[in-house]
Length: 170
Ligand SMILES: [Mg+2]
Image (cartoon, rainbow, N blue to C red; front, side, top):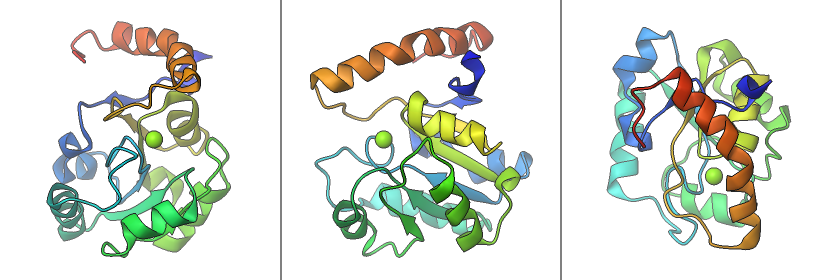
């Protein structure tokens, strides 16, 4: 049961996800979350590190799309200079936007990696789509009651991951 929330792989930052690793898994596209995965909420534009990472993927034939539950204004501003296929208000863990992203990129879900920071939205959506599911710890969480509550709900699945991957050192 917990495996639908537990990611296939945890990394410390999106930057640790490399073209070599993805190609070794037969992955040709990344459907990435935005907030707290690529940038904190308060960072409106991508930085050079994000640009370099996306370019390294594209140079290796790996397409990147943004699938975010945040609103179109946020996603469009962030994506303005990136020009990636982008799907705001995605409603993850629902599958609809993930499917739309696959269609836009011309890839099958099994050839995709779902990247995000939340187990109950990003990881679940990835597993529902039968994608390789990669989670990074949130860059900078909002300290609201609701966010703390969500992180509490994730804990047992984090423990499960740690049990399955004793080498993981957050
Ligand atoms: Mg997020």
